[in-house]
Image 1: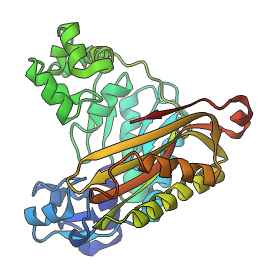
Image 2: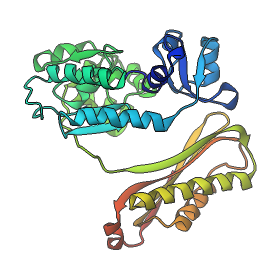
Image 3: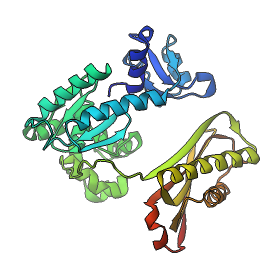
Length: 349
């Protein structure tokens, strides 16, 4: 979807249309941009940017608080449109999904025609625009979907894959963010196709275990299937504070609150977790995580809280000001798996 949260706001409030808008927190409360309209992007405003910086770039910026129930409702409507074509729909978030239309309920042989029909239906039924990428695999379809936003449609047929890959920078690869891209450029890898001929030992030193995956993707190879209704892999809760936290009582209370929220989520989903994690971001933006894993999964709130608080003791909480705290669980299993594990555990930084 194109600037999804911001587009929903502009759709529902005509006075916001054509104006620079962000969905996010207020600047004075250390807010962060969750989504920016295309009018705001023209000023350099981007998601994940501090709202205060966004206002400096665009003083006329309108800031709207998020309304996630409304965004979820729009997302479910859009997913319903997708599923009218194929049951193989894999949502990645509220505003993005993979579809496998090799065999589809419309009996349409051409994926390009399906993409056009889906885009038209989304526009007619929701008043929103979507951009689509059509390609032989997930990696290529993901890149294509962002190629001509907003309201774009990019098709990479099998005979065009190589020509398409030749024009991409190295940071188009999955898993290559700004830091990793910088490491790769330092060893002479600036284009995606440069990864193919890179010295294996040098590439391994730069990106570690990601090296083999990147070389496959650089050849346009991606065998991952579209998986409908993916199981939950993790859940977490976090909060950025208006004022830095210094007092351990307040910090412990926040970690306990978020750990209990996570335990309640596990109970609602009828899941158990092996791993408890916490996240701490200090005032200088240094961010650390700590985790504690056991073989026997649980959703017992007291256990999860106890483990999260023990992890907190392995940080500099109370000695350094804290800007953000988070707590969560990973290694999720269903209830029927609870009796098959013993008490092995491990700690990780």
